[in-house]
Image (cartoon, one colour):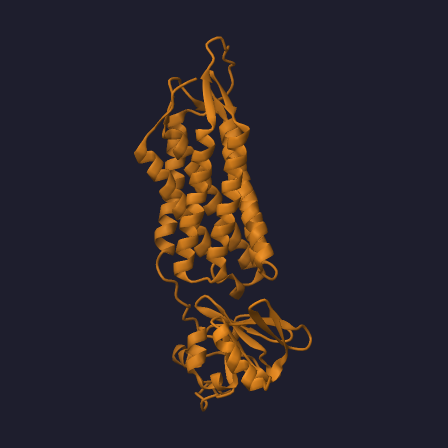
Length: 388
């Protein structure tokens, strides 16, 4: 059995690249609910390439960190297939999270798919090894590496998507990057390389380690560049929002200063484009590139979504550019009751209460009842308001 040595510098570099790739992916997928379906698909494709390429880079940086007593080359087709496999499977996991209602089941499925993608990439990359040796795997090592990959990927997805703040994204990125690295090195610890002195080499095309090193370096460089760009805080674009015109008239774009006033608490634009008196009963939302305003009477609940919120009605979940804390400080907040750190509820639409163990839920809406959690600290206020 051939002795295996690792370069500590390259091992550290592989872990760092995995974490940066995970952060790049999660930042690219932040705020997708405000985009059209086409743009959302493009962003998911970009995120899949970043994450899949990062997993691939981490694996081969880890392989370059290994020193074996014989020359190792790689089959070009299997090497390419390992990257495409990682991109495809992780992309399917991201699609699950960003199309349809996100819940714990979807997060579990996305984490499982991502974990399988990481493991599939690793063993496909290992199959690409062309050398005068026999590579063998211990069944326990395979099972352990796949289990680590799925469990850690699911935890990372839950951390990143349960609350899309920059801190939770960063924590989820570290967990996901460590998941990729832990899977790789756990699998390598249970892999043996036996030099076969009587093996006759076949003249097959192979990828030289230097060419592989250059390819991995370029991929890692792109990921690092994206990481540095996306690590900066994202700001809302200051594009002038079109003003809603009367029926039959042509909508016009509002000047920049008026658009700013339209985003301020309690202000609306009149048809003439001038600031109207404070709208105490309306909250802004965006739809089809247009800033609009909704009466608080129609709103069932307002749900926090990172730095923004979603307005829940009987028909839709609409993007609102205001944060939950900003809404709480605005005049329309007097129409709502805070039942949870992530929810404001319109008491006029509450239809019922349900207790599951120590957790209380309230139901709002008619067409499709929305289940909203009620924290222990808020339960007494809600019961007093409802008289129960």
